[in-house]
Each structure stands twice: as structure tokens, then as C-alpha cells.
Image (cartoon, rainbow, N blue to C red):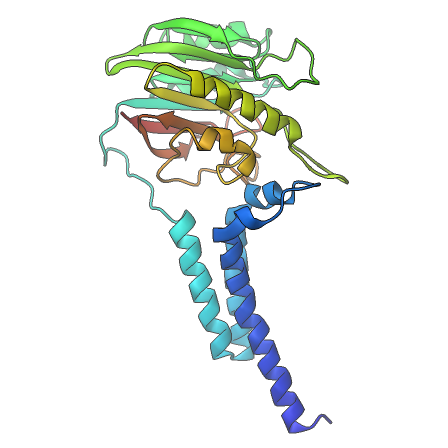
Length: 315
């Protein structure tokens, strides 16, 4: 039987660990940029699933309750407050704030078995512009036929497309191809939308996919493509800019810094968009310059492995 003093010291050490772990979670949430992003891209991996650190808070609080540790219960409250401060912004209610533009964003999947049904569902969301990725040559006529009546203005390059209620001018490809990929990799466009609020440069992009394997988080191509897209945005002459796309990264991921450092991010809404069956992260994004992205929300599932998004923008 252990001496009483030794048992008390062991309990105190256990309480100290329970108090320290929630504070560590809170530190990671606010200080994730300090995690190294060397080989394996550990920092980007953490940032991709950063909101899920919040699951550790009730778990640690439960352990503290089981141990009847008052000290252990205080730290989870601090961690919960930090999580809500970072991720808990309430969504903007429908009709609760004036807006000028609604952008619908969707990676439709190149294996979509119901493109016309997907297009009709996207059209019913009431967007002013619809940005799509993975629109293969075989899918393009289907989407064009289904969207054309409501969105008569359309441009597409490679596998990305833009449909608009407003006239589109000055449409062109944007080269965001990583150096080691072939010329057939074509996933960026830019067009000017002539909206009632003035001209807006609309960019549609699909950055390279990420791979998690033995060597770590494979984001090098994505990061290279994001840097090229960031350079194009920096050179954009129009003041008002909207970027919609499957960026294969969350807004916390430092690999998207060439974009998030130049554009405003949504003011509210977690809106996890991937994978469709059990969304873990929002890797589809709508960002803007000289405008506020008031909120972003998911739309009902389609025939894709991504959920569509709708974002309201105020200039």
C-alpha cells in the first residue's frame, strides 16, 4: 500500500496534467503558426483540421469530473472560450444583413452521374454567379444546358467554369500550373462581371489535391499553385475581386497565405464542405477584395463528393 503522502502527490501531478492539456489545446488553436512546417508539412496538417481540436475540451472536462478535480475543470473552460472566440462566430441570418452579390461555389466531381440535377440544384440557390470545378468536356454541355436559361453568360477554360446572371468580359486563363505538371493541367480563369454595383474581377480556381502518406502531408504542389494564383491577384487592376474555388486547403492553412493575405475571408460560418458524406473541413472557399464576405453556408448534397457553398458579399 502506497504511503498517503505519495498518493496525494500522485493525485496532484494528475490534476496538473489535466489542467495543462486544455491550455495546450488553446495554445495550439491560437498559436498554430508556431508549429514547424518542415518535412511532412505538420503545420499545414494541423491547420487543416484545427477546429476539431475543440473535441478535446469536453473529453478533458469529463476526465476532470471523474477525478473530481476542481483545478482540472477550470482549464477546459478557458480552452472552450478560446475555441468560441476563434471559431464560434454566429452565422449571419438570412435577410439579416444587406448584401450585393451571392456567389455559389462547387466542385461538381468529374464522376458526377447527375450533372443536370446538380445544375438545377445549384441554380435554385439564388446565386448571381456560379463557379464550378471538375467540369470535364463530357459534363460541360450538360451543365451549360441546365444553367443557361438563368445564367446566360458563361466562360470556361480547362475544367473550371463560371456562369453569371451578368455579362462577362475580358475572360482569360490564369496559369496556376505547378512546374512538374503537363500543359493539359488547366484549372484557373478570370473574367470581369458587369454587376449593377460595378465591375468585379471574378477568379475561379482549382488548386492541386493534397495527399497524406508515409512522407507526410503532400501540399507542395498546392502551395506552389497558390503562390501563382496570389501573384495573379496581386497584379489584378480592378479594385473589386472575388475568388471562388476548390483551394484544397482551409483558411487557417499557411499554404494559402498568398491568397488569405490579399483577400478578405468570411466573417462567419464553418461550412465544412468535404467529404460530402462526413464533412471534416472547408476546402472550398469564397474570398474577396474591397468587399466583405458576410457569411458562407453549405447547400444540400449533389452528385459530388463535395458540398456546394453559397456566400453573400457586400462591397
